Length: 470
Image 1 (cartoon, one colour):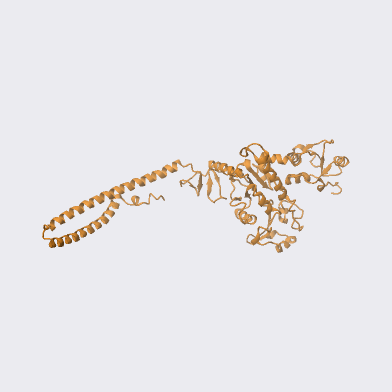
Image 2 (cartoon, one colour):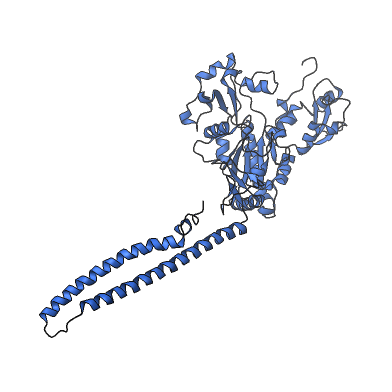
């Protein structure tokens, strides 16, 4: 309710307000009469002492006193009426001022459906919800654009871009306790203390009935990436889960602060979007293990190899092989996915700020990503055998396109310019030619690994077997 409406001027009539002050003023007038009588007694004593003074008519003095009191009283009532009129006018002006402010306000955002500037109740729910910043907060599209421009300018001045990070299978892997297999029971005796999460990696979250394993190298990755990027968490998990995982990854709130987005905060159902990230798409890189989660932002995406530490994670994606925990193993710190993608991120960051001549504000990180990615298999010429079905066009297949995106040249014919034969069977004619001509014979996983890690791995790590050996 408005403070103006609650003022005394608007809660009672002007006459009542004047009468109230009039009664108070009448009391003051009585006090003035008593003071006059005391003064008269003092004058009488002085007259008795001084024979030269004239006699004073007490009746006359009383008449003068009464006349003066009436005059004072009338004047005070006039003052009250003037004050009352001024107060009423001021209240009206204040109301008009509030109405004018609401009419002129552009309503850049709302909180609980009230404008954050003028306080006007807003029925229109246009704009973008920013619940991860504060529940009930919504910004208008124009305000979102203004904030993006402002924040991006600040980041570019700091030589920083924006990095959006997925949680599950990218930075960590979680499993419900009831899904832990007998082969994984040993893990319950190896969990780390929640009091020292900055150094540990395996945690038992009893209150969530869950166990979480952080991916190897994640602490080093976040520390180094934070120097180059402003980082967000964006997960399809709920808000409570996202908050708990953020505590494990960033216990001191050094990396993400309040930039933790869950499925409860998104504006799109069953997919992720950059509409609630305060940065231009031209300055955002995404790390996620699921390409389908970002249908509108694939050019911003670096696809991560999934981290399957727990058995339940493998089963979730239909894999029949044993998990890392069942093998009592883990990814390499130095050569794992996070270490390799950090190298790629540094290369992209360097090319963005130092490699291109135009001003940073006019650059697009997606173009830089394409250039860096095309350098992974640059200089390689590939021929495929027994990789694609015979009834499809090889050029339309994802693996062919992936190799080209990594900078390789793909062909269906053999010649001496071919550097690699990609095969599922070492017994094919093309495979035998590769061996005879001292060319690289590699499994298709060699291309997939290069795509995940953004680096060309040693060919000998991806040998090809004959059908009988398989």
